[in-house]
Image (cartoon, rainbow, N blue to C red):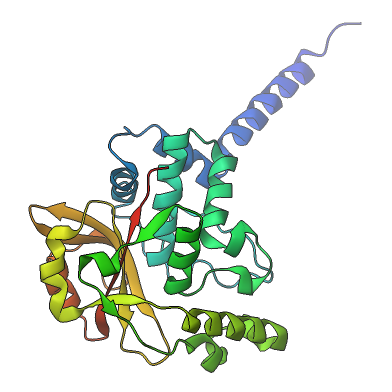
Length: 278
């Protein structure tokens, strides 16, 4: 029997097409992760966090990137970021770079950064409030809240924005979920917190370092922080690298930090966390 060359050619062609599709169909996030692991590594962990954040400059701002899923799951995106996911992604990438983690290891670290005890257990397990996020990541040794060390004073505010604005959060339609979030708010309110008032920020700037994580306390009743980002130093002045709603992308602020905060009426001050090299 003569071989059917037309059929064999078709099979080879189909295989090549299939192979090409499989190669290019590798998840976008995984491909970008691989590219970022090839970036030069230097300096301490804070510096590495800043380098990873810089690699996102120009990336589109996408609001509420973690919301809208029917069930809580890990969201891993590099092509659109809000202020929180920029910070979390930059930290997890820096740790992956320093500890030679693969993509699955990166996702595990991102889960530990984003969720209480590193376990995804429904909507309340996510660290929704910055105060809670800093506390939990400090507890596991990844960062230190240095606010009090760089000019901070007691931050006394009742945190209850989510439970008192449940209509903003579809997941809180479930009474049990609302009760768990309210319980966590009570725990946050039982702790002591510090912040640097807006008027004292310029004095604190020389004490900041590349890669420090900053969050801006809010004038909104019941809310701890409006926004967060990563510090880069130019001389003695600090500038903010952040996913900007106004700029619609990841940008470096044109104003020094104190002037930037002064330009935003709803920012009342700042909280600072520093990465710890383990």
